[in-house]
Image (cartoon, rainbow, N blue to C red; front, side, top):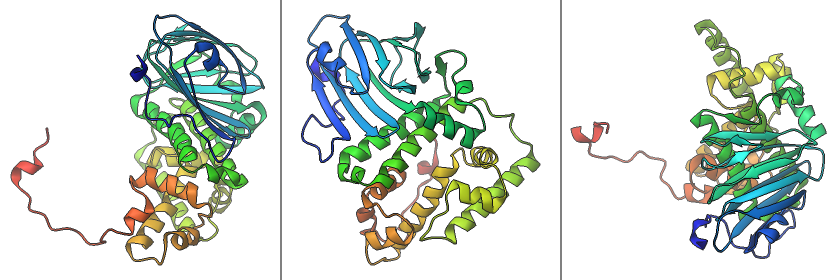
Length: 343
């Protein structure tokens, strides 16, 4: 039935840029042609009217897409360029490279290999394909490992529930931001920021479980001190926010060491931390009566307001314009003993 396909995505229509496309197909043959960077063959396995939808975002070295279908399909696919592939389904079912796809399973593919995916009757996947050279460069910089090392072993890997949910939410956020504000993609800096964010999410998912054993209590204190020094440095450079490289130089640390410290203390990467510290500073300014959202955002180095709003809503669950209407004061409420009982 048509209603089995996710309705969370806008139906096809004109977009302000060709870099983000939303398409719908009532035939698996047409659905197979929905991705420009892939050569695909789809075979429908279950009976009934077919409906598939795709949102496809092009970010230079990164392609990010989400695809939903209401019928089981056998797919034979091949990226048209040398690229690494990392993806995840929103529910269990089907197979990838002849391996069962359970809940919270990351599926991956190194460059040069064909992909074989068999979807369940109702499928919903989010996938990133990343240029080989760019992924190799960032894997070396961020984790200190060769990209090919991360793709050794099984092509379908189970993550813990929290890590899997974080991965899906992060990739989904970039698609939603692009759909909500396609004009943002006109800025090269915004496209690069999004591409780097997708790559970071993939690296973090691939590296999940590969970190060393949990640090000792003394080690945790050291890592916490690193995080606090980084926070102070970010707050001291509001209009020119430091990059990860800047923090590494300031703290005299490697990228891998910095990444490890943030993951151990906060379970987020350093790129996300830098952004979140600044987003909190903007929110504080808005609650304190900043003259405008744009002024507050620019004061903290957010020059692309569309992307800023996406990040802000993702973190705080509301648009910055909604924050300006709120009182910065606590609200008095009457507590009852029963209100504190945990279910």
